[in-house]
Amino acid sequence: MNTIRRPRRGRGLHGWLVEELGQMLVNGGPDAAGVLDPIDIGDRYGVSRSVVREALRVLEAKGLVTSRPNVGTRLRPFPEWNLFDQQVIEWRVHGPQAHEQMRDLLEVRTAVEPFAARLAAGRINSRKKEALESACAALVAAFEAHDLGAFTRADIELHSALLAASDNAMIAQLAGVVAEALRAREELLLSPDTLAARAVHLHVELVRAVVAGDALSSDARMRDMLDEVSHDLAESPAGKGTE
Image 1 (cartoon, rainbow, N blue to C red):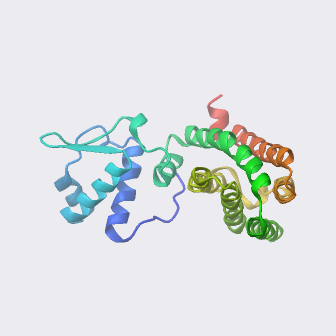
Image 2 (image 1 turned 180 degrees about the horizontal axis):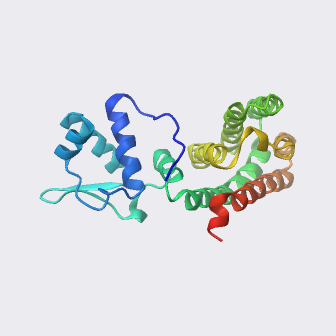
Image 3 (image 1 turned 90 degrees about the horizontal axis):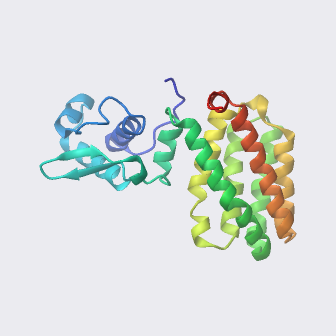
């Protein structure tokens, strides 16, 4: 399956190997079902055993693999993966599970973000207002410039500011999950030509409602926004293919 890959995260060989192995495991590559042999991995990717060991430790921390004496390193069952890990989300988005991952992200956002908007409206202060309004201004400017990348960066900044404005530390920590959802939407569902004035309008109205302390309108505007995402997903090739 041909997929769009963002520049690899991580540092040096270790980060690169984590990306390679993680993508292979999540996408059900030919080696995913068997024992991961560190020596074979090192030979195949041309890296040292220490780099392989460190990469496998990272993947184990993400819940993807388990290592046991006399058994070796194997892929763990899907329900045991850390599905909120940003790299795991990214790997699923760029593989055969793309539609399921996009759907899961949308459902999590629908469960959390309208409530976060209500909380933010009731707990807003001058610093939080400034962060929301600054991100919104950047979003509008990116739309007017027809700059999809800048639009997504501003969108991430806005939603992160909103979650932080909820003044709930656990909700705020979901900013990374939402950021991955927004990046995936850009890559899989949008193009510069599909940026819509309605989407910008909904963001502007959301920020206005939160800044005004209107909890009900904040909730409603966020739900309207997520309905647009749901429509985009349903109309995408992947979405139609699952009907």
